Image (cartoon, rainbow over all chains, first blue to last red; front, side, top):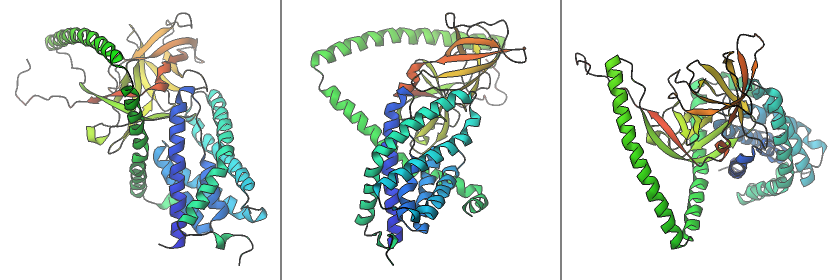
Length: 177
Length: 269
């Protein structure tokens, strides 16, 4: 298996770990009617640290996994994640993208953008959008706090997973020819 | 370019991809559910024998009362069948109750769904009603090999024909008022003008049986507010749903049974 494929596999496995954890948290938090959503975290590492092609395939697969569990047309998460990946990839050279703080900021902004766009695509089905927006803002607030808390761990997990798979990120580091 | 490429992909490929991704993730949802069951088992093992004896005694009492109800139920069914036969009425759909454990509760602002631990392996079908002791839970939206997804009555995509208990006129119910830290609510439309409801005098909302999905008489919730709609022809309002919907650990799927069609030429009893 090539290094690029190993990177993609590492991203998908880490994404599935995140998905399992989120499912359990949301399952336990269901009686409070608060839910966490971390789509932004699924694209952060792939967009900041991997090559364009490897990152794109990773986020397409992760988007497909999300789509399979959601009552939306198959491809919505795929398109949103791919768009977020393209945007982050083309601006990533303007800041020190290996820094954890930058990773956290990018994850927060990506999550905010994806959450709002996704909400606009779904809000039409609700009989009372005003009430639903209130709920969505509460969900978004809790999601952002949780995201800020776990992003350093998750980025480290993804970096370590890529190393374990023997597919280092040296060629994608800034300043390396 | 990705958007254009995706639009050109045939629907069959998308459907196959979706099913593949769904089944790949099913074990990830099932495994924690089995771990939770194991945790419950070991926590119950720590209970004393006196607790078990008390629980057994309570269970025996419940069983005795249910046996009585089963006998009454059998007599009532026979009576219904006799009256249907006398009056040549169409028979109601028959259902097979299939209890299932809840694997996952997915209650976000966009939709509310449950994943249960039974699927095609128990012949569950899309559209089958799902109930619990408090009334309607929802209906089966997707069926996988070993899991099924239930769209709940709290979800905005859920619409069904309802009626006020004791009143035959149909009302339209839709879920979707789910504020954070509050019990779920739904909305009703096309309520006749002579019906009234307020928080201190709520009206029980039940399924009407129209549409053929849900049997009639299942509890949906309590209508707590009714106001004239903008056209003045009907009323619309809010329904308070059962707060236990968010804590469900086990539900019952009513699997529709194929109607028994008598052979051609057989006289009706």
